[in-house]
Every structure is written in C-alpha cells, then in structure tokens.
Length: 177
Length: 190
Image (cartoon, rainbow over all chains, first blue to last red; front, top):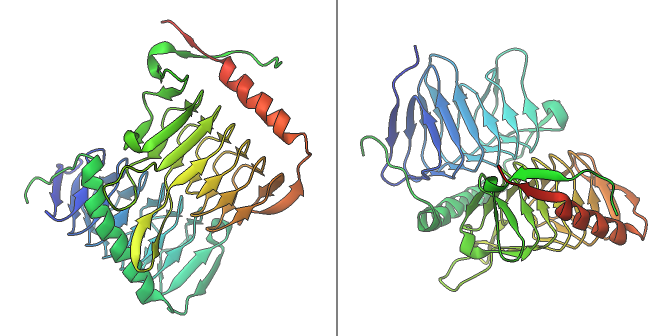
C-alpha cells in the first residue's frame, strides 16, 4: 500500500514544476531542485535538508519503511541516483554516480562521476571519504583542506540558482507552506 | 555518397525551423531565447539543453551556441559550466562548432567544442573542457574538468586519456558523414 502523496516544500526552496515527486517528500529551505528530477518516497518518507542542489535527471528513491534523511548543503550532480538510507551534510555525488541502499554517507564525502557504489553489506562511509574508480573499488580519506572554500562555492551556487531558475522555469509549491 | 538506409521519423514528433533545425518535441529546451542553433542540426528526444543557466546581469547573452549539421543524441544533457571568478559565481557560455555529433546519454559541460568532433555514447565531458577540431571521444569516456583535447586525437577511458592520433582525412570523412546523417533523417506523414 503506497503512502499518500504529501509534499512539504519550504517557502524559500526553489523546486521547478517539471519535477516528479511521489509519496511523502519534505524539501528544506534554500534547496534548489532543477527540472527533470525524480524523488520517489515509495515506502517511507524522504526528508531533504537545506541548501542542497539537485541537478537535472537525479533520481532519489526510498524503498525502505524508515525515513530517508538527507542533510544540508549536499550537491547531486546530473543523472546521479541515490537510494542510501541516510546522508550527512556537504557531500558531493558526481555526475551519473549511483549509491545503493546498502551504503550510508556521513559528511564531506565525495562520490566521483560515473561510480557505482554498492557495498555487499550495509556500510556507513566515514567523514571525508572519497570513492573513485570504476565500481567504486578505490577509496581514500580526503584531508578536508579546502572544505570551507568548497562550501562557500556551494552556497554561492545555490544562491545564484535561487535567483536565476524562477526567471525561466515555473515553480512548484508544496501542499502547506 | 552513403549507402545507409534513410532514417524516418513521424513528422509531428519534430519541429523543423526555417534554417532546417529539427528539434524533437520531447526534448527539454529551457531558456530557448539564449540558445543559437546554426541550422540543419538535430535535437533528439529526451535531450536537455539548459539555456536558462546564464551569466549574471540583464544584458541579452547567448548561453549555448551550436553550429551546423550537429546531432544531439537521445538523453543528452548540455549545460554551461560554472565557477567563481573574483569571488562572484557565474555560468559561462558554451560554444559548439559545426558537424559535432554527441552520442546518446552523454553529459556535456564543456566550454568549447571545435568543428567535426565526435563524442560517443554515455560520455561525461567535465566542466570547462576544451575539445579542439576533429577530435574523437570514444564511448563511455569520462573527461575530468578543465581537460584540453588537442585536434585530431582520440581520447578514451575513465579518466579520459590520449589513445592515438587520427588521420588527416578525418575532417572530410566526418563532414561527409554528418551531412549524410542529416540528409538521411527524413519525416514521414502519418
């Protein structure tokens, strides 16, 4: 029995109208959702924090009963796919990367472009992890140098998009403001 | 001359402009006033062209310039690159030359693509990449941001690396192929 559709979109979030939402989805303040994004809360709800950037073609799916929590200031690049149960803040999911439901992310993690990260057993990536190479076979811990600069860039990026996107795209509002 | 069969499409599924561009009705073109198509180019279904991601300011700008005889494959995403310069965040315009074929499912965030470039399927072209004339990018290549691909070279792999030089006849061959591809792509009444 799928849950009823219920979208809570913060009044300061920018969500384009060409976005496919299903189930119980909460989108936090200052988050930017580009057109052609799909967010499917099939079993449990999805809660997205503030200041995230979700680019076109991203698919976020929650197949589990529990709440899928995504933290603040995450960046999902074009065509990435995400099914992880929880995610911290300031992560980057590269272009066409995939994170399976067995993996959870802490904060400041980077999944490089075109990587499929699907550990066989449930796993929580520690802070500052970087996953790269085909099949996500290689990983290392990033020093965290430049994390603040990266964050400043992310904030400027989101701020710029919040001004720009409403000029060219129709916006979508939540059920309750 | 090519001996390949004619590729047909239902007339209603594409919009043909005065200059011979064929744009699928199922393609997503955001900010069309900021996109220039050179003529005789084909935009396939499911392609996404982000003309809305423009520079700051109110002056009219061109975000994506596409040359003649180009092909944007199915599900391709073309979006201008971004960076901060002197503390200000901005998107930068993207130029694509003549006779450029972009294979299905590729994602292009290049700054500049020269003439007669062939990009394979499912490639990822990173931000601010510069691809010079007559280069070829093999299928499934991932070019990291700021890569420069020299003229007449083949790049492949993840991350994309130089594989070999292409023959000097590449320009004529690719030019003929792109023109033939456009001419073969014919509407049928339904």
